[in-house]
Length: 325
Image (cartoon, rainbow, N blue to C red; front, side, top):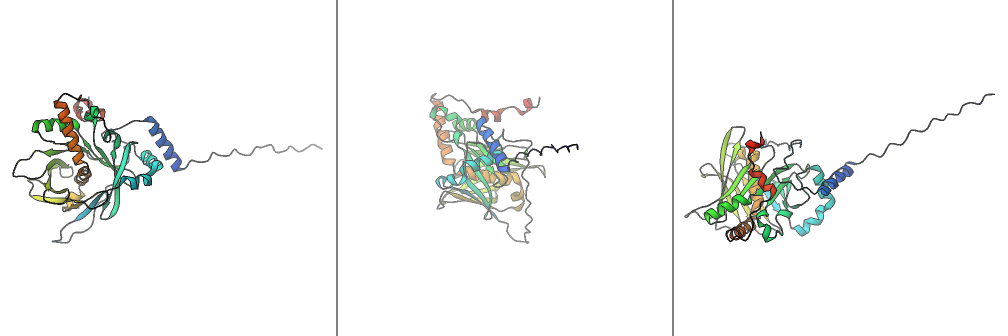
């Protein structure tokens, strides 16, 4: 009898185990860490990044009722929150958004009406422990992100060259900053202005375009003296109408500011809202900024330091018309 042929079919090969989302995010973050590339806020605007959705406030306002929305800018105590964030968590943030660079130190959180609504950090390599010979490259850069999606919500940067020029011309420390806001076609130039008596207290100013209405809004930050802490009125137009207030809570551990928005339409205008919050983040570092500009001004006037800007700052001075050619 003929022997029956035995079935020699091989068992299908096992499929490789699928990597988890955490593994993929960690792998991407490690590649970014190895690359060691540093980006300015302007470079971090990524065209293919999914924009953060704007949430419309539909809370009705009764006739005659005053509008008020409170936003807390809460600074952490570094020694309490550093271990809580951890290296791995930071890698995950970096994997989700290239604007979250490896040298970013998370320093605080945003709470809107008491609910967590963002986190922010400072570029430590460009701000902390910069030697005197490189003082022209000491730049304060603060970045703000959504706590869950890690979407980039905005950045405020110190422009050293313009700050130095304005300070030498006025014989006063006049910082110049730029706000970079995703999904907004303009940079916000935010400057401290030189004031005269009888004005007491500092003044900052900027202009913001309401793109829906096609008009520009003049915004003035007016410091209130004879108060405990750093308190400001935010005014528009001729400075007669107060549309927001900034109040420092000096007894808070770590530091905290409360921003109260008083105009519903401006509160809903993303460039205005974000500029106010970014300005408030900067207030924590204002004294250090003034001291750094004053020291650099003295060194430059004495010829003791070379005015060599950081490449990230130089890009703000590029001619946009030439870039289009």
